Image (cartoon, rainbow, N blue to C red; front, side):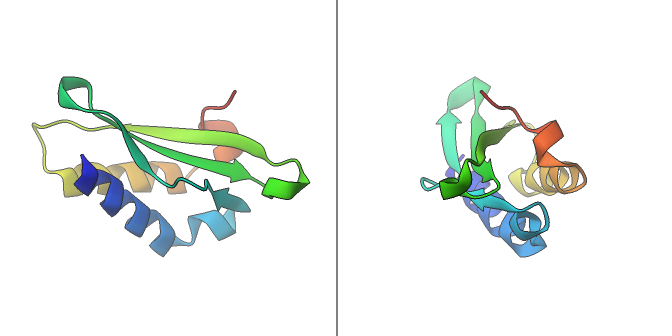
Length: 92
């Protein structure tokens, strides 16, 4: 799971996703939320700016042991980089 979180952090940053959608990565970064059979990696971020009333949002990537982590991260990055995070991400 830690590998998935590291890969996701590296790949999402490489796409320029944060800049394109005017988002800021959350202070604590991408992290593993669950382990075991229901493994999840959470990617929290703020749309807009932290100090200007930005909205806290997040994407959750489920991770399966049945498939290579690299492939799961690749698909997830393709999915979230193609959509507006203000519409596709979860929020409070």
